[in-house]
Image (cartoon, rainbow, N blue to C red; front, side, top):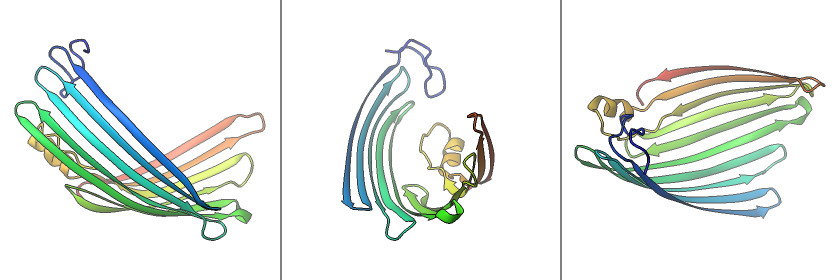
Length: 212
């Protein structure tokens, strides 16, 4: 057991806290051609936390697969998908059960321009869950290496936060159910001279939009 006053669901625990859990994982990879690779991952996680006034048991199963292929010269295509099923029993004032499923499908194409030392990646992901439905999350990324010392990276992407059903307060439940949309702009450069001195600079801007 953890000593008294460990962090609990509200930041303070009364009495001892007992944590236990199990993780199992499986990974399979297969080369299906000269420029083709297939990967499958399966993970199971069991979590059990018990306090004086609060306890939670959670089982989570994750499945995902990826297929990487180079259909034509200077193109690397990556596609795949995933599924998560999570079930928990939460006990505080009363007993609450939570069951959530999350799925996603994605595809991206990395295009190389060797003569320009430039790479651009176009991609999109469709993600859905039990509460807020499905969302499309496109992305555009690129890199440019004008010299051996200088590298530029940039990215524009849209993402959403997956909602949760922790029923602590009605207001919190409402805020979590209305997942947050984020549009992210990222610019990064790195300079390294011949004496191995590194200089990096990250410029990041995000636009948050409430609701889905």
